[in-house]
Length: 121
Image (cartoon, rainbow, N blue to C red; front, top):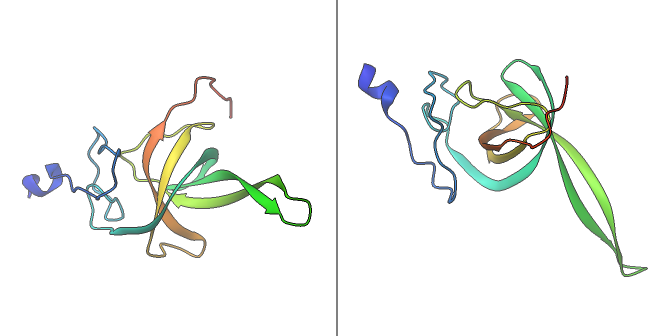
């Protein structure tokens, strides 16, 4: 039984290393059995107040064809946070789509890049 907990899955996403911590969450892509597929998104963490869930903001450019210009837009989404990954407010996260885990949660955090400036909650 202890061998299965120490086993880490390869989720098939380049440049993503499994975390050093081990968890027993069934919805963890590395230590559980949650398959990941679809888009790989990157954003900034805006809230960590929910249980095992974060809110992240994606910034992108949208083309206004009439004026041949781009405008900045942003979108907030929810993602499942496995207990083996440590995240703080302001960090940059890499998130991958998966099956729906809740009403608004259809993605999971796979890697974190800590921010240089610490943000107070």
